[in-house]
Length: 185
Image 1 (tube, one colour):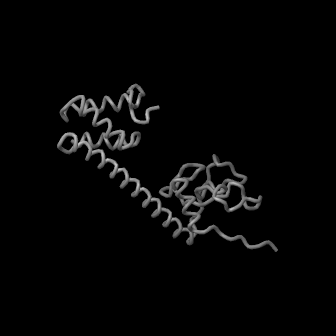
Image 2 (cartoon, one colour):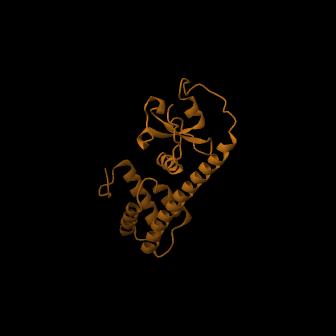
Image 3 (spheres, rainbow, N blue to C red):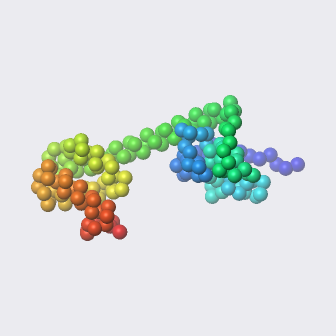
């Protein structure tokens, strides 16, 4: 008689979800759209192990349909079992907590850049400027933006002239035409 299969630990499941960004690697759905599970890439029945390199995040539908059914065949989702509701709730809470951490980190990075602006110009940035900083932080580090603020201050003098100049620096960095950018490719 085969040994009963031991389930994955909650810790390992969470680490796989975290590694995969709380997103199904087959279809991209997050816990906001479906219950997530941990799937064995090589099934246990074919010798697949519970090693993180053999585990991926999959939604309920993709995990259930991965066998003989193609993933592009539409199916109706089965009703969620009662014991899965708590796991689904936990996934949603963990996903939301991670999203809050990302928002807090982005807010902190924006504050660093805004503080640099205030040091250079003696006044906090305008709402438009702060909004631009938040957008630019998706592509540039706070240090790079601080460098751009210093250049804009040196070239323009006043905050009212510096912001358009700063926009030009960022535009040139995006297109790769600005020499001297920290980390330029």
